[in-house]
Amino acid sequence: MLTLTNLNTHYGQAHILRDVTMRLEKGACVALLGRNGAGKSTTMKAIIGTVPLTSGTIAFQGQDLHKMKNYQRARLGIGYVPEERRIFKSLTVLEHLAAGEQPVRKGLKPWSVKRVFKLFPKLEALRDRQGGQLSGGEQQMLTVARTLMTNPSCLLLDEPTEGLAPIVVQQVTNAIKHLKDEGLAILLSEQSQQTAAELADSLYVLEKGQIIYSGTLAEMPKKAYAALGW
Image 1 (tube, rainbow, N blue to C red):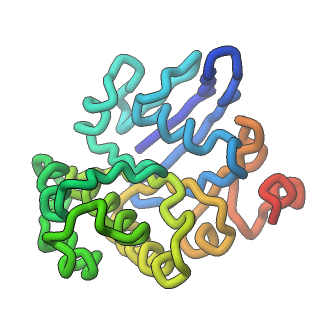
Image 2: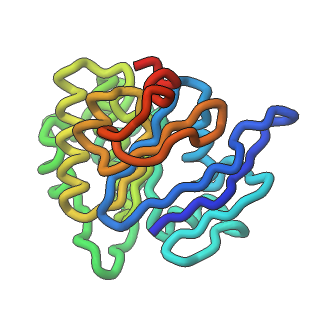
């Protein structure tokens, strides 16, 4: 579904991603692991188009994304949940969901407000509350829910459990499991070994912008563990 081949990116003179190559298949959950500054968020932003490539290619369902704007990539079916959440403080939960709504995609079960509330029951009780009045965990649920309203076939989740209370981490993790079971392709940026173990079919480990391991958690070598600080 999603193929990254020899991606290189720069911020000014700083070389961030170095020949990053990855694959994400339909219905799979792939974890992108690394410490802060390893290049996880940059990889996500390169896929959605907010960080330009110096070289390399990105293909989604066989289409080259090189000349596409970020909104065009989203319309193809790539949903992006940024680490910063980007909640509108003055909009209610329902208004956020309405803002994200996009046409149904062929072959996919459409997302609706009712379906989103079934996935995140807490949001239904907060439907008329403004984004700025939500807790961090509630904002994270809302960001995922808003992205689902675009009816994506591929979901990019940048550190979705970072900074959340353990009970909220489990709620978000359970929601991601449900999405995976429904056949959504998920690329998950994470630092937590437990979350990766619960969700990921396979993983890539980034260190200083380079992939130093790809495979399963069970087979991960000591070098990769050390790079992650586990």
